[in-house]
Image (cartoon, rainbow, N blue to C red; front, side, top):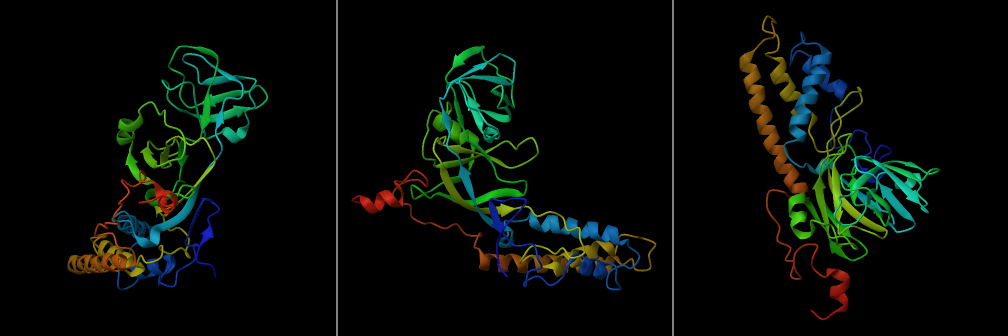
Length: 328
């Protein structure tokens, strides 16, 4: 059985295939049965038990960037459109009219701009017959008729489950990209976004309208680029009986936390036991610390590595291709 797969919901990511991992001992139904069994509280409703198991799951997931939540993937940037007809924009309108253009629906999700003194605007719709773009924000400058323009994939969405990069690289140029860069830092380098070409930074931007993690690729890419990456995701709640936590996140840890809650959930239940709840909560904290130690053994995060970028800042050094072909 393959370890990784191309996720149909997130086709540019590869990660655990969704089946119960060998390192995982319980599925959701088995966890609910333990919480609602004699070791927990038989008086609690199974639906409620599922809710507190998922609450514990989310609490654990958000505690750190767990190794089992890591995915790898690729940011595939298409060729930009620089020229090819002219564009007209009107103050207060989010419609862009093309003259002599050849705009297709393939441009949806890319960014449009006129000149360097106006920001990128994301393309939400394309009318290929009438050559009209619909962008996300109405144009705020003075109306412009028949001007040059740029369409480029300046912003990238990483999928609704993506939360943070570990690394990304510019494969063609042979250099690492700076990731998780605050946008204000990028603004100090190039507030007008005049730099175009081979990218060196991935800056965090505001989420998309549907809540997806969004980045800006800089310098703005105008040619096809492929940027391999690894990063961490937020898993969905467990819903089906056969669902299980992601690899290396212990199911017994979640059960322990849920039992601690179940023991004090119903005060008039004969299974109410505040002392047992406290013991289970202490047990949960010990198991959580143990799991964090195990996670460090898999993917060290509690120390900072010094890789020695002798050729300059990450993303701004000459890259391995340059270094191999020039005297150091």
